[in-house]
Image 1 (cartoon, rainbow, N blue to C red):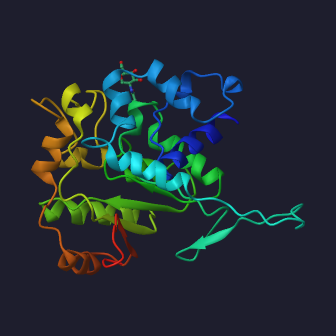
Image 2: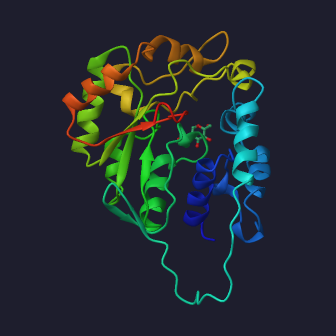
Image 3: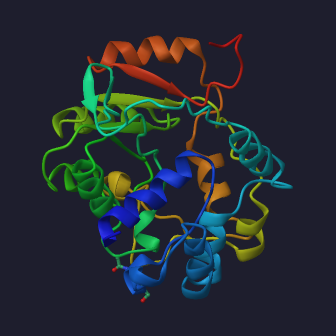
Length: 267
Ligand SMILES: *[C@@H]1O[C@H](CO)[C@@H](O)[C@H](O)[C@H]1NC(C)=O
């Protein structure tokens, strides 16, 4: 595995619910034989506050454990004596052809782990022939990610109380060539991330939430508990409902995906 492949693999793991921090920049890939090793390596290399942010879930981490269990129960039923000398794993999402039925999920603040952060993920995702969804809370902006080169990209959106902020952000994502808006619908309140509270989590001062920098909302700083929890409570709109999805449709021509649908009833 080269560095790029390893990086994308790490991000893909996030997709399947294995939250593994990373410190790939420091590591000699040759000695890694199992992806779970990245978690150990990351723990050795990343400052505790950062490692814990990537590695931990909310409250008793019950859902994190449930997710791992659920994914571990998905089994393949390999059929025998089928000619597999040529295989085709391509599929399509919203009409875009991708190389495999796996995409890169939005994960926030990637530059805490690597100076190239989301831009490296964007290049790796393109090289792998699949779709990246950039987090609203990237430490690289929509424009920076777009400038890394061609690639199909979606933009994950948190709806802030200030709808002007949302409007500007959606327009910028459109202009930067993003192909869909993935609206997060399961975070009216942030889960109680206890490790972040213990660590008094803040975004390191040399980083910012690049998409919000010009709007004076780019910093996650000093706090009595978790800086992220305070930030979310202050900015993210807890009143978000179906009428806001309709509103979003009036301000963008991009397809809107709902991220975080948790019940069949809501589907
Ligand atoms: C931010 O500062 C930390 C600590 O000095 C450093 O390790 C990291 O590479 C810096 N990140 C960026 C993106 O410049």
